[in-house]
Image (cartoon, rainbow over all chains, first blue to last red; front, side, top):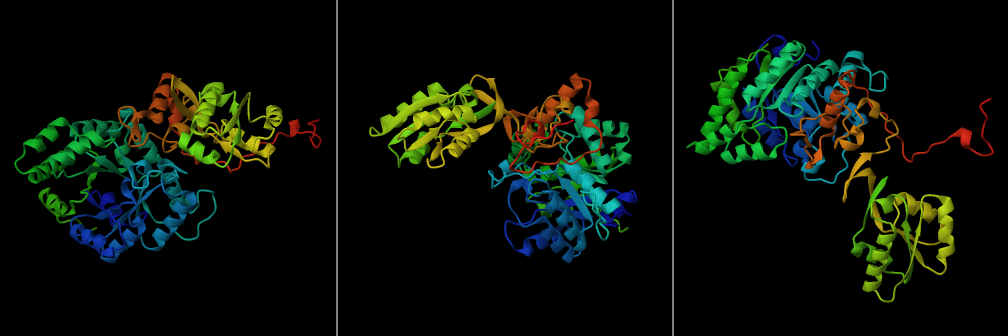
Length: 305
Length: 221
């Protein structure tokens, strides 16, 4: 075992994993994190805690992780290279391990331009690829990025993101291979609405044997309203939301129900794609729908490994 | 070349407001070529300043480069009883001039933007951040340090869409361009390999060439 985390045990034992997401508050109250955690506790194997998501300042990811651990949940520490240089990243990783965190998701992060401090200086000292490799080196060789020895173990299960829908399409799999080779044990993808295109990407993934090198968790974003569907179609870079889906939401009598239906149908299709080892549900501001989705998708109870 | 843009007239007026006699110095190289600080812009700015303040005396001059000592010599002769130099050079030129006139305020009329090129008339884009370790040979002649909004060395990130960067639909995704350039050049293998971390330069930069130094230079033989 690399870290012995629950997520690692589930994936390595060949079970279909379910992860969720917990965005910390724009404030200092641990209750917000606890509340989201309690909601998702029984239906997720691990919860990602976002790191200043969309470049908006929030409670730190590591604090959120510790709060979740306090109520018996397993967190995935999200870390972006936008806000930290290699010193800060490595130091926070050691701190996270000291506090019992066993999973990490290495990201570049949304550009600061989109956030609430748009003229902040972006750090980007290293990129997500170098970051993954750095964590692997810390874990497997007990060495910092500069080659110096680390005292103690750094048992982390290493995750990375992949966007099957960004451009250039044919290059996305090469980049995934690079992430897998750099040390990504698992991958959480961008939210999938265009299953056909995702399936095409997965075929390219399988052709290169990458589904055996890293565990791919397919990303899902439950849609609450037609406005949300439209917004994601028109405004979110790197998301592919088919027009038919927007129309379906627009025609629905009960948009929320339709959103749940779409999500469940997507999960069914994803389960049938070879090489998909789990799902990652990003129900931003709609966390309370996740238990129902997981239940109705037939993924309850969560395995105990 | 170095690309600069003129500051707003209001900011320039604010800077020069304590003074009456101004030497307005244009620069004949980079900022002239990017139409920010050449002879025409010197004329326009002088006229604008005087039209706003009739008591102001603006003496105009343009030297070939404000970043070279031999040309700054020419400003010495022009200085006379001017109280201040308003420079239309890049930040480099402003500092070189300020170094020569330690007892005179040297004010920047421009905001220096980047090292870049004129993409089309009236449009300039950034190409180089002078990072000190050029990798253009393996990125198809396109610099990800300067042209990727996140300076990624292993892009493209998940925000690239339809060929543009997530930061703006007007900005091409550098990594998409790199990918296509390498494909065209049959060099896609440069995208593989282990990701090494970059050694960022320490500021302020300094280049020393012993072979060119006077006096204490050591000869190779």
